[in-house]
Image (cartoon, rainbow, N blue to C red; front, top):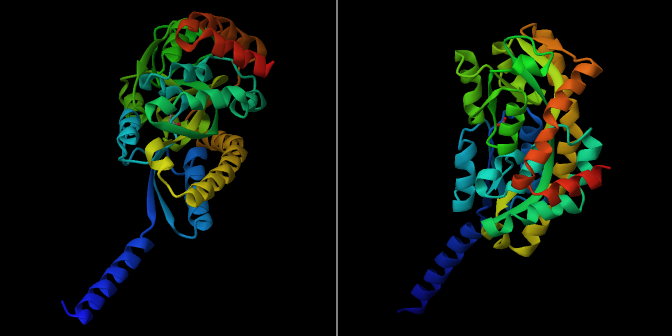
Amino acid sequence: MKISNILAGLFACAISFGAYAQQPIVIKFSHVVAADTPKGKAAEMFAKKAAELTHGKVKVEVYANSTLYKDKEEMEALQLGAVQMLAPSLAKFGPLGVKEFEVFDLPFIFGNYDDLHKVTNGAVGKQLLAKLEPKGIRGLAFWDNGFKSFSANSPIKTPADLKGKKMRIQSSKVLEEQMRSVGAMPQVMAFSEVYQALQTGVVDGTENPISNLYTQKMHEVQKHLTLTEHGYLGYAVIVNKKFWDGLPTDIRKQLEDAMEQSTRYANQIAKVENDAALDAVKKSGRTTVYVPTKDERLAFKKAMVPVHQKMEGRVGKDTIQAVYKETG
Ligand code: LMR
């Protein structure tokens, strides 16, 4: 071969390698809620920060509203590497075999966000995320949403008002038991199907932080919302471990910084977003919003707290005790 041909070949190679080297690393980030929610906004913030801090070497593509995968599928997609990042609700890790996450679903276990942060920012949170590693998943952070309230088409003032009602829940055994504790019939259903199920009467009611209720327009098909705030719903941001470990060290470090910044943002906006959603629900005039009295809320607590002990076998007595200890 002539030397000029070799040089031409090397030159072409260099050009194509250059083009290849400039291709950004793509992170597909799939989630099931609207873009205009605490999780949706935090995912967009992560995409922005990741692009900034890696100087465009990483492109995060956010797929909101179950456009790419629904609840159950997204976990499988992450493990298979079809997507790289998710932020499922903490109530959705049981089917993966990590039952301890359902400690977050125990009714009335957290009095407020401060209690919750003692767990998510402390040793218990770290230990829980570590349990994902054998599943091929790395847990990066906890993102807040908020406290759930009950909705239905008839008023809910006492636990007895939920008796016999078909209530949609996330895929958590603790939530199943919670609904049974008030005589309701739990129905596990993907988030993307809830609006239609409420509209057509497949289920009678559900429980949500208000940001989820409002952005899915569930208030348009639920006449009554009672601010029970009986349980917490939040997220673990997770990545495919093989993908994450395979990233160049400097890029992984920049992405960790991006995650830290977006986590701070997520946890700053969560309450604000839920309060704004509640205002919007009230303004819509589609749902009667009821604030239970102290005694009415106590009656829900009394009915539901026995779930903690009942679910010790599932969640682990140690995990529950560790949360009690952190939250005082
Ligand atoms: C639900 O299914 O109700 C929630 O987990 C949705 C979400 O991601 O907030």
